[in-house]
View: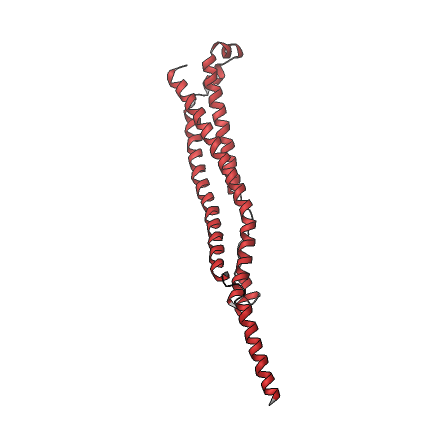
Amino acid sequence: MKTKHKRNIRTVENNTETKVRDNQYPSATMLVEICFQDYQRLQDEYNKIYDKTNIAIAFVSTILTASIGSFDISVLSKITVTKLWRQGLGSFDILCYIAGMVSLIIATVLFLSVLKSNCIPIFDSVDIRNAEIYRKSADYSAMWMIDKFTLVVYEMRPIISKKQRKYDRALSLTIFGLVLCMVSVMFQKIGV
């Protein structure tokens, strides 16, 4: 009789201990959703950088092609050092054109470097099976997921930030190059 009673007490103690352990992190199931949304937001941001870069490369390539096709290169062969000093504005036109083209070419290279693939960390759902997380309590599983998502997000942020900075620099160079090309075209149309 005593042994049976002791077994029942142990079973109750184990069940109580499990319940306490299960409810140790009651907000974990809610927080795992927030961590997942943060992970998804970063993945979307990473993908948007690629989409914007592809559009920018197409735009810059079109501008480069049009600018190179519209510039009269024979003007360069007729210019000497003495004529450059005499034709102050004409040389400014050529300098604007060359600086604009160089800026656009550098911007294109930067855009292409943004497209260069980095190994970005991703959440590997196979780990759930390998670690047999499905056998654990909901709170434990949620805490495990929070840990995995936050580790991946922590590694992703600097990669995305670096790509965004490169994209921003390339976009600034594109704008600068476009302005210089427009100035050059204006001088060409004026006939300077």
